[in-house]
Amino acid sequence: MNYKQPVIIICTKDRPKDMCSLLDSIKIQTLKPSLIIIVDGSDNPIDYILGPYKNLNLDYVQVRPPSLPKQRNVGISRLPDECDWVGFLDDDLVLEENSLEKIMENSQNKNVSKELVGMAMIINNCEYPKFSIARSILLMDSPKGGSFTLSGCPTMYRNTTDTVEVEWLSGGVTFWRKKIFNEFKFDEWFSGTGYMEDIDFSYRVSRKSSLASCGQARCFHYHHSTPNKKLKTLGSWQVTSWWYFADKMGFNKLYVLWSLTGLALSNFLNGLFKFELPRLYKFTGNILGISKVLSGKALVKNYWQK
Image (tube, rainbow, N blue to C red; front, side):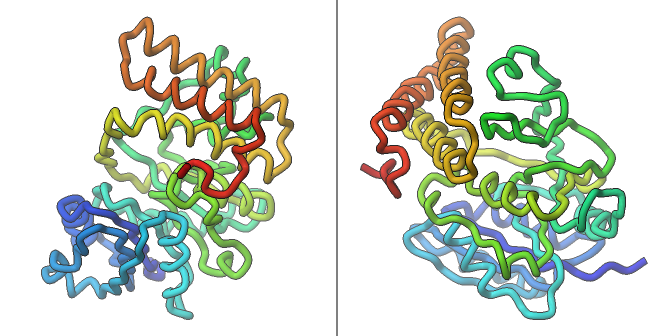
């Protein structure tokens, strides 16, 4: 059976080698995308690598200064009218050769509660943890993976080969029906953090329509570790982005503070007793973020830059 070809949007910054690996994996797909929109926020443009991939039908655009939600929105603005499904892929992915075919095949799935408008691939080399009672006490986990707790915390997916209905989608392995962009855009408050913008977007969509993780569409994510000097900032983003999202969506703030305290405590204890220095850096950032929450500064747009 033939399925309509999706359009792919790749938001990238300073990763030419990763981009080549991703594009190489797209070249051998059993179902090719109709168009690939590359939105480049690099300090040094990477369009020089694209020569060998012209047969993929590429549309290249630069966005400066870089901002993941802004780059996503620019990609959306360049979508052709006739496309139906749109994929957002991180630049450090490598796809299994039938990933796009499986996504489009499962986009016809009717075993969901509402119209299916969003799907995500499963990442082979990602750890999908089992349900944790300790984390559930902190309102950071629930028996149903891919859902939200009372504090607005997204719980991790469970690794599966099935198509499973979920409430949020991880932004870099995600496919959406184009028509939803008539109503929803990525919130550029998250500009600079690249943290929770995908949670915010998919939560809003999931209030009206169904989302699913597709266990048959799979990929590998070759994640770049955050340098230690940036981990304090990341720890602060973890708190302030969560607080902004929870405030915007009306989650109970006492529950949110309980979970944020648990997040900071988890980073501290793991850093201290498991000798995980990066977790201690994140802990110091968590404390900074919580201080912003308590002082009322966490909701100020781009306060994290100051």
